[in-house]
Amino acid sequence: MELTLAIAIGVLFGSGIWLILRPRSFQLITGLLLMSYAVNLFIFAMGRLWVDQAPITATADIDPAQFADPLPQGLVLTAIVIGFATTALYLVLMIGARGLSGSDHVDGEEPRE
Image (cartoon, rainbow, N blue to C red):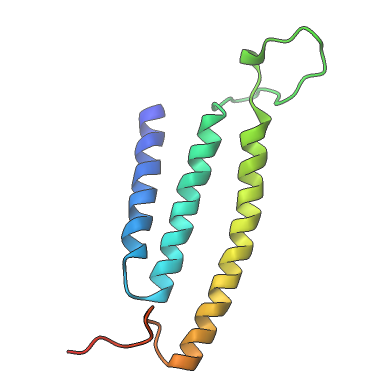
């Protein structure tokens, strides 16, 4: 399971890097999204993957190894909300830049052939 998750994170992040290096705005935004998904998966995996375990307990004599860490879960939830807001901002800026320049290239110019 760990190897599959590590490969998935690596493929997502590598694909994001490749898309960021592309000349079009939409590909840049998609690359940023893929990289944020990879980072979210990485942070979530660092809190150990537990199934049917309570994140917090109220008893005094607890073994922390038996419970999931709630901090990565909260960080990922916050990152998802912030990622959604920044993606909406990026899309509005991309549409505005496309309307002003007439091109969706990052530098605003079509390649010369």
